[in-house]
Image (cartoon, rainbow, N blue to C red; front, side):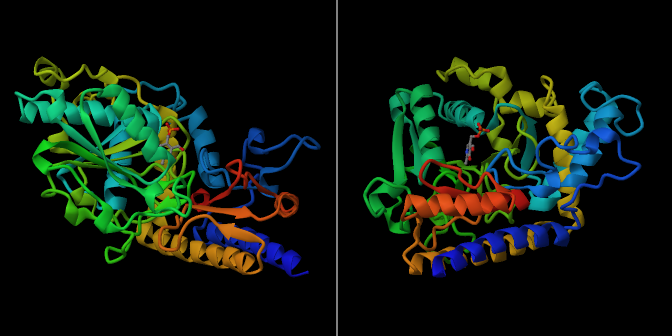
Length: 433
Ligand SMILES: Cc1ncc(COP(=O)(O)O)c(C=O)c1O
């Protein structure tokens, strides 16, 4: 009885707050299929499958997009801003698309209060593409600043708090074999079993290489799979230990914000040399990667090559992107257009401060509901208090039958894609951002 009641409470919270969030954002939960809407906006053919309005999609990314954005985007696919040409058919070098690129950059700048020291770039290749681009561009920068360097004299520091930062560190090892990689902190050492990612390590355990020898320091702000996130509160022991790193310029600090981008303000943004995010979690369709890069990191990768740096593919060169207003080659035009519409919605609904507060209260409610299951011996939260993600809430049922019951109950209510990992439920609150 208690179990059934706890499940029902959890499912009710998920369903209710999804509705409440969309309502508070002024974004409709139900599709607007009026006599003015083209017939293709009707999301299913009668009798075939589910209606969009019957489903709440918890997919961690690609994630759900607001209904009104999709409707507007569908119109733009046919006719972009009265040009008579669809957004995927216009030239990326034409004035309409250049305007869209500038508008999108200025929306990102406004929302995150990005200082003029940093540029905003758009490209393809996703978060994984940036695992490589970061290494190539930042090693090139190091060679330009230290012309007589040998690879063995260079350090790159990775903070490993989950699967994504681990993957990024492995890519760096592949691309920079002679360079010394230092794992500046490893969360597994502080975990319950010595091998899981369930915490942000204590500040005193972070050991960075000497600043003058370090090409960059890398961390992932929100570990999507593991549900581990740095605290937004600078006083918290699980915040990022900015004060332990060099002088704000060297070594350059790099952060993967793929799964928390635009879910709340970014603390200490100006201390970062580079922040990147794939769009498909919070911002728009897959295909777009957003890069916020400090100007001194935009370097001539070919000049660095003459000094010993490995060659950087031109599509990964931040300079090539910056010199061509993100249109060195054809950018992901449709994802950029949809992202522009999503950001319009965030700006018109109180910006990131308000969204951050909404997300704070949503995750508090959800963790409280799961903690009640924990007290009843039904489920366990995977991540230690203080290190828990606002975006991806991971927990495990103690019994496979209960897991099935929960998933079936959620499914009946139209709550989909809750099971994001073989052993864990990943609740990506980000779908509502
Ligand atoms: C934190 C984080 N970084 C990087 C990636 C990789 O992104 P992509 O699939 O765009 O390459 C993901 C994907 O889920 C992610 O969650």
